[in-house]
Amino acid sequence: MKLILSVLAALVLISFAAKAQSTPSPVHWQFSVKKIENDLYRFEAKATLDNGYHIWAQDPGGDGSLIPTSFTAEAVQGGWVGDWKENAQPKTQKLDFIDGAIRWHEKSIVFFRDFKGKHGDKIKGAVQYQTCNDKMCLPPAIENFVVPVN
Image (cartoon, rainbow, N blue to C red; front, top):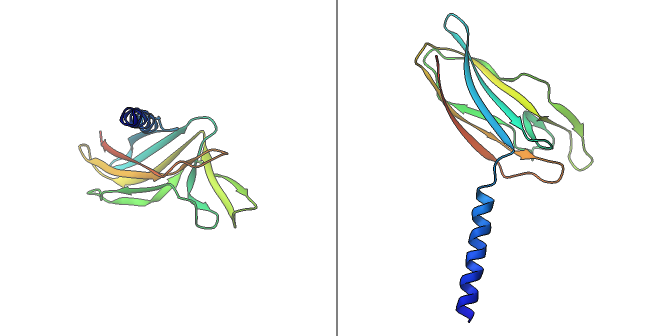
């Protein structure tokens, strides 16, 4: 009898673990490359967030405990031009339990960086981010990308 109960308990735990792993992310990423002029291109990473969720800005502020949205990308043949930017100012708020103001984006935000390249190049890298709502923060996540230059 104990063996049957142990097996049933294990099956229930496995089904909960499988469901937790298959929960869709509240952040939906779209990656693209747009030609600006001649050999100058712009890589864009657009995050669209489910209602009630936000991601931290590249400079989230606070006391250093927040995980900023950050990008790593392989070097491109023509070179990167400038730093990563955000297409909108983050929301800013001061909370009693965190030193310093905190900064985040909700609904949608486009992160971008310009580079010199040519048709046929590929932009490869990853974005690391953390998603939160007003009750909790999810563990940090990484989204990989490979985007051709067309």
